[in-house]
Length: 98
Image (cartoon, rainbow, N blue to C red; front, side):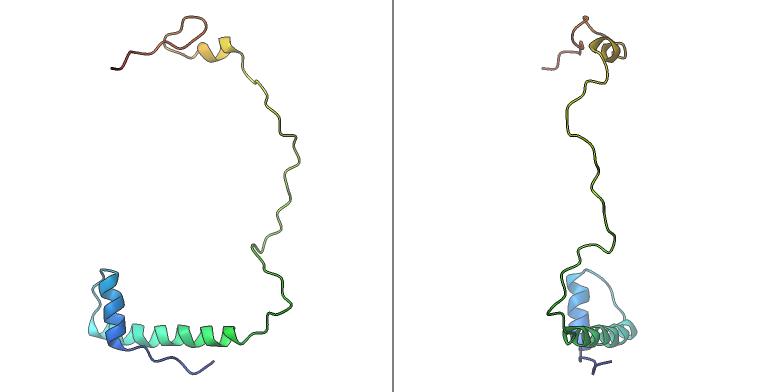
């Protein structure tokens, strides 16, 4: 692994304050080391040659659904209005709101 970046305890305290988190002195020391390790690993990844690699947006290959896109009336007006508490045969009747 690459040389870890040095993150100070003050920087960790600043990030904690921005995040509205309480971080003890021991946690600041631990997080400073962990953040440095993460940034060091990012430096390793930055050295990988990706010049001839196409971007991968998803590791899963998705097949397109094969259905025709068309509107279909699945229920008649009478079937839909049958569930209404009140209807006039053509429309729902709802309480007036003003």
